Length: 125
Image (cartoon, rainbow, N blue to C red; front, side):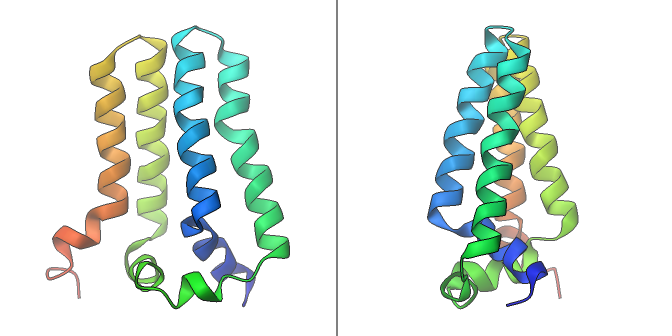
């Protein structure tokens, strides 16, 4: 599998999803406490390290051949990845301003970026 494919399919590995979900909400908590250094480290460092290790050492054919893999191959574009990151930034901002509404809005943006194809697949050819 070429590195580009590994970079795509590692995103849907259960361990990577767990790390991103757990550290994402933990980072929001640290932003809530106005501990920006810890928040930024928790938000990005574990995901980057885990991603690099996974991409260098793992095979993602199981993910590629799954229904979820076929879905991300079709719908997880760079734009959707950037939208996920933007939604996460909104969540962190919500943590900083201690606003549940902003945190939820950011989470909805992240969910939308993951589920876009479920709602618009008939319009996207």
